[in-house]
Image (tube, rainbow, N blue to C red; front, side, top):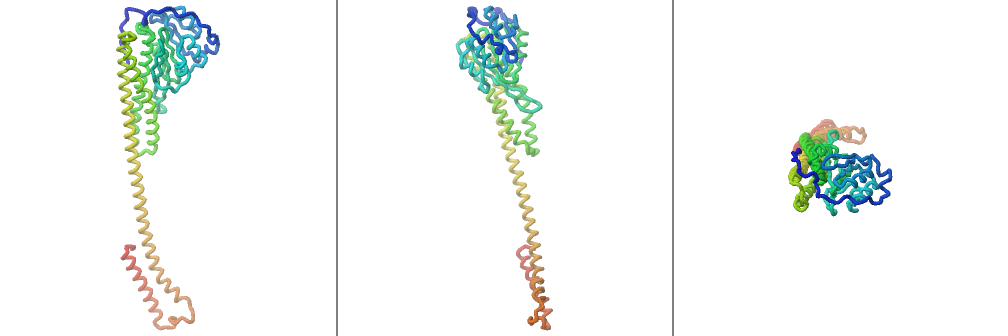
Length: 376
């Protein structure tokens, strides 16, 4: 999202105010642990849109800002310690509720105003190609009359690009902390575009896998659906937040260029939110189709099993029928083969033909009985 900015005739963005009050006694500000460069990603002081100093600690940043009534401090932190947050709260008079939220991640996107300070929570996102998943980060922003404090919980977003862009356009930076906030909003929203593209590709692949019968596709649909729920939670509140900012244009005398800037960001957020809603619906439809296909496949397998069982039963019937037919003469032969002396048939002249005729009659009778019952 690129914008063309016109140079403002007046350098300062905010109305002139009195110099920052003298330093408050805060022992924590001199603690070396609070000046840990692992947490303080970057700190810089700007005057009329141009960088004038890059302090090497929070304490030095505070000192220089107090001495420069026309200056603006931009402090970037990444997973700061509680001591660092409390030092910033003491120096810039941050509200305790906002400080409490900034100490912990997992906050919902929101915009709250505490006196002259805005507290903004944003959920950034980036698409990881290797893992084919969406990684979410959290960004807390404090915006005052002469300072901007960003607190990142996560890898996204990369605010160094935002800082470089702002420093390359001093006329934009000269509009003050509000311009920095809108540039951060722009960067977060721009970061959604690759995510939307990556998710769209994933959905296209899932549709192919569904009709190909991939057994792992259900799990992938479920995981992507959960990511879309998180994505929706990140984008949907932004629409209301940006409209809330736009509603305060007249009250807070927002620069006309920033108004256009914010409206453009709001349009992109609305478009992204609608795409995410569409993704959720598409995944729900795909899951329904997949369930239907799985059910059809299971029904086909059960039908094949039933047919195989029926054919097996038919074979068993045939085998049983022939076994019964063959068993009948064996039974007669076994009886007359016991060689007892007191068996009248053994000395009868027609005993042998009678036995043969009896076995034949039993076999023929059994054959017609089984044939009539469709066993043969």
